Amino acid sequence: MWVVLYMVAIVLVNRLFIDVPFIASPLGNLHIANVIVGFIFVLRDYAQREVGHRVLLFTALAGAATYVMATPEIAIASITAFALSEMADWGVYSFTRRPLQQRILWSSLIAVPLDTLVFQHMAGYLTTAAFATEVLSKALGVFLVWQLLRARAATQTT
Image (tube, rainbow, N blue to C red; front, side):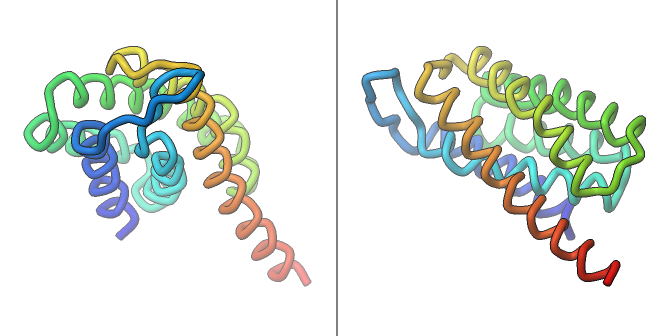
């Protein structure tokens, strides 16, 4: 279930970059997709928990769907950014052996800015406003899941 949601979210957010006009701001253009893309990282964490390292295959499939349903430029930027951030995630998940909520937090500290910078640069959307908004959006999504997992872990130990 998480893998399907993850794949659909990738394609939909990439379409938003094309279909919804940007908002001009003093710090550069901002897309609505910059605001909601953060929850894809949360879905990726759950998808990785569901299928392990095979999440990379599903990321590639979502990239292929983006190539057909969006544009080749967005698809290439998306796949490259997700692959690089997924490798960072994989490192944290594979080598830290920490509880899930800690792995989500640590992997996000590395993967979120990396993914954002690579995608926005390659897609031609990199502005201060877009970068800051997207990183904050992703951080908020991760923080909310981290809090939920932490609360769940606390109730399981009592």
